[in-house]
Image 1 (cartoon, rainbow, N blue to C red):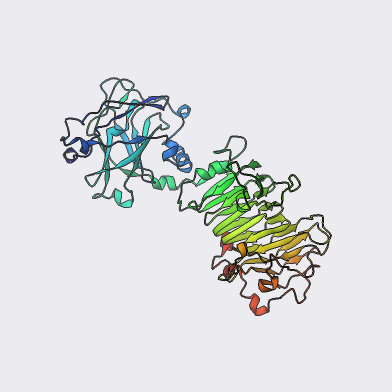
Image 2: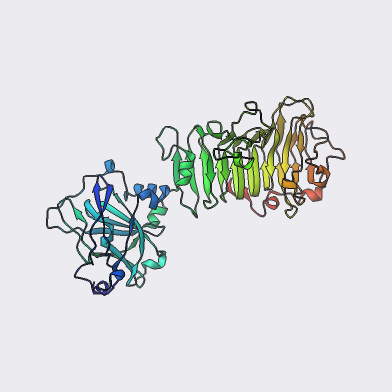
Length: 511
């Protein structure tokens, strides 16, 4: 170990002493010292290496911690075996030094420590000291102490080669067990990669209202997923009504929300556009959503998404109430329900695929600028009590630079509204944007008697005749053909494929 004795920057001169009582840290500060006699002294600045001690939840994502618990590397206090106890005169040893991913190193000792100084351990890569930012303390299933360290330097596969290996070494001996045994200066171990074992454990989190799952809220499970994850993470949600606002952030792709049953697993909230916000102003249409989906490669299945705002409960003009706001690439919704009234489903950028799902509303209840496919879906227009106009199915705002907007394929347009009182859609130009030339195609779909003969209508001074609204081989009492209902030719219809609309993505590979 002489090679470690020659490194000047490995000793901490600021010692953070952690006393553990039931493994709930009580932090206090000891006086500064300058290492041990085994190391060459230099200026005080060379020795300062303060490591922040944080709660494990701040250092390790909930998903990662669940996997560590399944491996027995981290458990709750009451779930451990009786730890080994050594009489005085037996030095504390490091049993394992493991790389557990996400630039984290787990140092496992051969017993439970009563007094812990996280700066007793230093790390070296290719004989150079490795900076450590934070540490957290827990115990394993044997009741032994485990300290998790977060490296400030990225750790990768090269960190386990003979030349570039990482080594943990004891540089101070403040930490002690119940009988006053301390660490042994220069005790050292090479870093071992246990990420293959962790990767074999499924990326699964569970949610239920009964408290028997990993989390009781959907957002709690989403928060437990590490940012910038590269693999699918399944969140299984048990039956129940989850009244909460849910956001899938942009930096959390590959999330798969799976409900126990489509009718029994309900995510709901009741904000609406004109509702006053606590800090002033109103929520607006975008701010009214119950669920926000920004993450790419997202999947939802067997779920009901609802905005439960009652339009009759308040006397305001802005009653838009979004159930789902979706903006991201390759987002899939299978066997799901979208419940609301005005502006139920806001698809506002990227690519979305809806398969065998149910969408309900009245005014503009499928709207936005996405490229989206609705295959084998039931689209239900609610009766607003009018004998002439009970709303509009779509309000697309597709940019003119996008060749495709919405494609409804092999779907059914249904309603409890009177015959001839619902429009297929109207062109939405947000803020009067002249480049928002909506694109909507209904193809091989059933159109109920509620669809008005004209089919399409104007919006805010913009004519539906200038939009890209087309139909092809629809059937049913609402599928009339006239000069207002432009039909695609057979040759034109060949271009409206799922992959073309979704920019080369084929979501059916997932089915």
